[in-house]
Image (cartoon, rainbow, N blue to C red; front, top):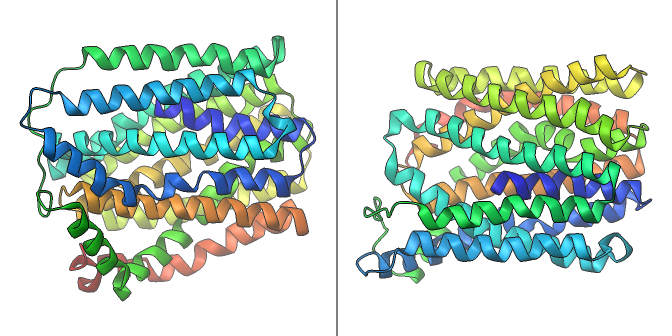
Length: 391
């Protein structure tokens, strides 16, 4: 379900707004509205505290919370179909803000289940298969909305895909109960102890080293992918062509890239995987720079989109595996670091939109290309003792 919502909000929503003539500077506000997705670490201690409180009761707390959060997302997603939100950016901002807040809670519950269910050596494979589920949801949302919107309207497209969210919500009811709801380290302490712990991390220089490296590592990935719908729409790509060129082959590439990365991190050292991902980011930036300065037919455009998506799928799983390994099965730490990546997503998307608005697409992709080089020389700091003691 997370994939359905994410693709609907992050890809099709900007494409729709761009098609309706909304300026890029205004669309960038939608990226800011998704900031709650990057603040999961503020919600994680609270959610974990609730799980601990009811873990010994007859209430299946994980299933109950998942069902409620998915039900709320369903209602919010349906509202996109009923309201002409492109006529009011304030309404669009509020809806995206609420959707990303609730989906963050749902994701935290999924993080918790994953961390307590898999061993450290299995986390890469677990990330790969969870990525497959995420991308299958993206396929349902990303391609289906575009085809339906082209045949009928955006409203019917979003309402139809809401049915998939309904099925996901109903499926939550039949999930087996997870009895082992406890994880390592500070999990049985109070909410305020969590907050104090998180504030302590923010005061450490090594934490900011990790965050800086994350920003450099993910800047090109995020700018290229978050602004891709707008870029293609402004190049004259129709809704169905967007689905055929980017969404369908892109989602397949995401699934394959995730599997390659998952098994790669299982067999190889994570240091080597991160280095390969950085090189991949340089290649993807060069490909999009070529697209920006060229007039390609749909076949070559689809090939370039697929290659770049495959590369970024690998880098995403590699980074998530690294975070999972150093978090020591602690859902709060894992969520904190993953949230940092989401904050980077918001800041990078907004920055990229401003670069395009004030300069050009070519300048944006040159910036993405250059951003990969500093991290190539300092990425080993991710494995230094100063960073490892942090987590």
